Length: 112
Image 1 (tube, rainbow, N blue to C red):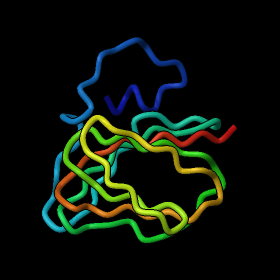
Image 2: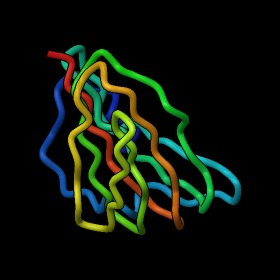
Image 3: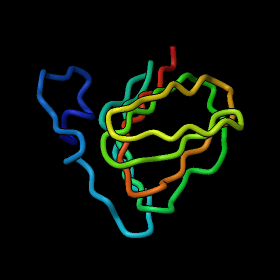
Image 4: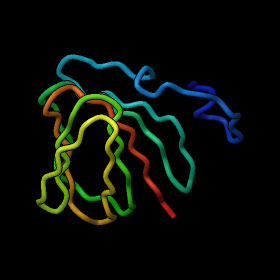
């Protein structure tokens, strides 16, 4: 898969996303799947209790939970998401992500 993520022209493939990244004790693990000038697709695996602190991004982003459960806080409003659910994080809105239990997510950032 690393080769596919770095190619300018990708080929059609089937991926089992949750199996492409592993949990690590006491850590947040990330893996870039696709990186283009117009956006990125990144997998994350959060151990229970781990978090990304509040920050803003100049682009719209979508978080899709592919395993476990998480709390996503956008502009001070808390959302509890579980496997199979997704949420949009609007550009320039403060947001944070917290692992209420181990969870994996796909982050799709749109830069155009």
